[in-house]
Figure 1 (cartoon, rainbow, N blue to C red):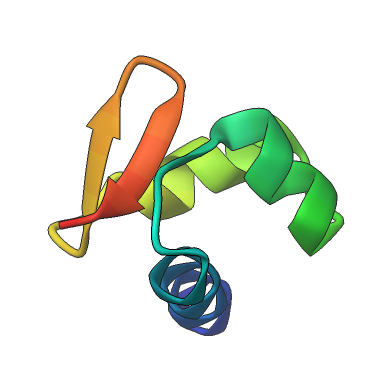
Figure 2 (tube, helix red, strand yellow):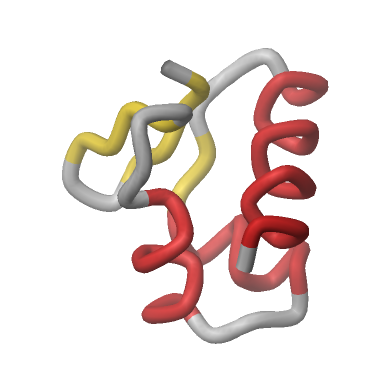
Length: 54
């Protein structure tokens, strides 16, 4: 889980903007529910289905 969290953080940081849970899941090859559980963390800002770096 920590490795995926780090990968998602890097992806969002490099993207420079928020991304949807669906976009992140497609990029990571994971299920949206798994992405939601990983980004429920102080490193991320979640608003509805949009996720960004906190």
